Image (tube, rainbow, N blue to C red; front, side, top):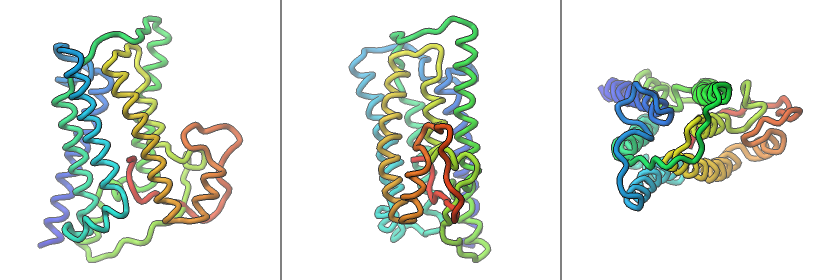
Length: 258
């Protein structure tokens, strides 16, 4: 019964994550299918909007980063079963995003506006390329483990998951953090950048850079010299031509885009 309950819990949380992910695309892109987007709604006083939006971004960053650290996981799994630790992480991350969507306050002062049709088209292509890269990169490592489904399925079957392996599939041979790269493309590529959108883009970029530093420290602890060599051979975010990882035993990131 515990295994069945874990699978149901994992499936419900994954569905919530997927809806939240799709809404995030519409929210950041100001797509008309979303009832509320980053630039929709009535603009209020500037200072309260800055404070609220900064707190919402900080809430997500703290939850997303702290709960991903190995030390927190060791403490957390004293109270939460190991099989649903990842699922619970995904649940709380999704709820933090929902809070951001609901309570976000628009700041509509224009920063830049692109009106040239070719420029608009290029930015829109980059926007969609970014989201595609995020989703593709999760499948290149292990999408269903990243979002907790593999763990609850293994519990139901009475299996133990294997230890993480070092591998560099496809684009991971050119860039160490394609998930983060995809988010940066999606957050910055807009023909109409408002002050509120800029706050979002700057804050998430800062969080991504801090997250990379924390994540790579954990990966060095986990994989040692293998990851140190990988870091020397492959660019962090920009896939410079001529640089790629040399063939060797494989890397699997045991966590999501934090």
